[in-house]
Image 1 (tube, rainbow, N blue to C red):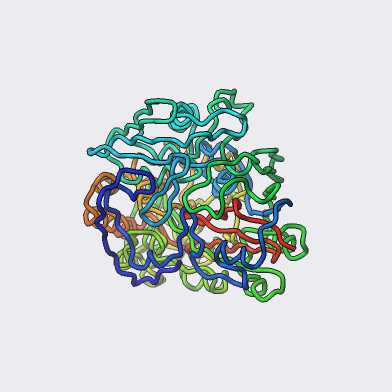
Image 2 (cartoon, one colour):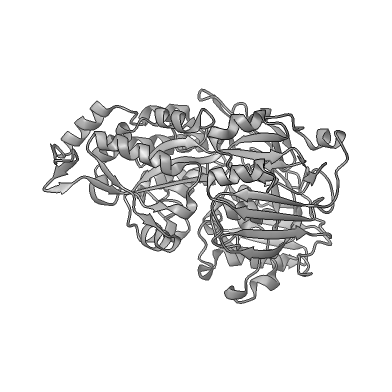
Length: 574
């Protein structure tokens, strides 16, 4: 689903329903046109443009030939895995892999609707603080442990336990207070305050329900054990993760393509960071599918016989450059806005991504509810003359022999660490373009290469950076709270890497999360988007797009609300 930049916002008021298959109890802000997406239960079947002639729905795929059981699908991805515990890691690779191992309490079935999954029904208290879930009977974890209310409690407690050191999941349920087993199959979850995004948070893989027996083991012995369609076999660090079919799978979400076990015998996720190598592995038949088809090859793959290209525009935070406003020259908003005005984002995105990625003008993707097109007017758009004026005004008037601005004998230098293991989508090439354009107005950007340990400890936690780049998929505007609330720094399991500390932004994001009034939520989310652009805490770059390449033998792959591929209904044809 792709929305134009001039999509009008609207709100919907829906009656409260308190059984499984219900919608969120509170009104939610929507973007006009979202309902046009083809949604089947928890699976978004069509999100954007599809290449080739692969059927868009499971029914159509089945009509082309009955699903075949057996075989192993190998899926090559960029990046690598840092942890298999969804409560710990925050990377997209973690979500992609763990979605196959772990089921969630509820499934997101539309922009503001949720259906049953491990919970067959639920109700919400009138004050919005207590959620009571009734679990499905007869569900077991891969280790044979039964799904019970105690298992749900153990999973949620594990997420918020400081010892877990959650990098993301804990922030999703910040108001979590406690869970109580009412009976074997009924669990009551109490929040410290009303929290509208709670059901959406529970639907993501990072809050998947884990076996309490597996969680009770020492950290060094951790293995991911869920109830999902595939179970864990092995993890060869920096090489691959291997999964196998769970023959007793009995927890399909609302709207699943079929009931029961997956068709595939196994799934292998190969870590192949180099774009050309990954693409070559697909076209030579070494793998059956890849994430991150290089944009330069996308049109060629669409036209190549025996292959298809799926294009999914990702909701949530765009791929953005965040400016650490607590450090050095970037303490001055004029310098931050000057950097923004020095970069011709439109030109760079067009030249690097060949029209397959859209340049962003907002921290939010336009596919995300509550996207405010009016906020774009606050962005310091490309204007080198204005950038130079702002730098002069901020006292950076002189230039050294290399053309860089200096003040009080110090060069205007910004540190943007390069984490090679996390590089994808030619982001290193994009960074080079930004460096070159910033230099033209006298700003030096250093790109020291760092390993994972240094990237996390020295930079993300230690704050030893001026610039940091990241994107985050989550189909709810509450992702703005994750990115800009003062308490949501990376060290506290959040995404506030600009280290914003704004009472106004805190008020807006918290009010939006608690209110039952859709107009209040819309207004608050719009205010956040405008303020972060006005203050130049963020420079939007592009909207991430899942360019998934598949062999023509691969059938039945669909995509969930976060645009992760869903393999429960996938099968391999002739």
